[in-house]
Length: 196
Image (cartoon, rainbow, N blue to C red):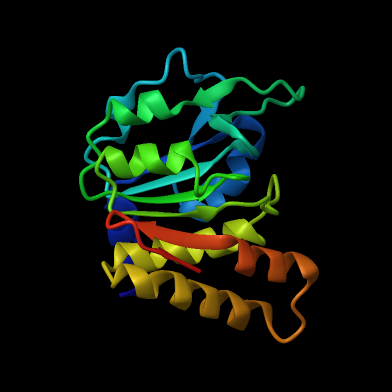
């Protein structure tokens, strides 16, 4: 029965896009093979790839006061991976976005996803802590968000439940990175409601 549930979960489509250097952690977090930047960049990204996907998971670079998101290769090159204008070209009606991206929430990119039809954006308006090759900190929280979002729970409850699961998994000795992760992530719904 357990194996059946795993197969059913993996069969449900969703979109995963990450920095090339972080593909292992993204794959472990989302249980999907991600599209990576590079080789994909804003120049060859097709917004239609996101359409019809109930969940959109991103693990890219973001910078304060910069609306674009960036990839990362093994040599440290950071090509532009996604822009708000590309997002606005897609029909994302009903999608839920989970972004492990520094400064991903609260800015133009979040607004672009909501304008394109996403019903919720989970992300951080601050720096996030994540690993290249393991599910930890922000990826661990993202993994819980993705699992809960697949169950179509109340959007306001998903973040609170994901944070509670995170605390339970980490135990009593939360590190400063754990606290930073829990404090940084918020959800903004299509109705404009932001919740921590």
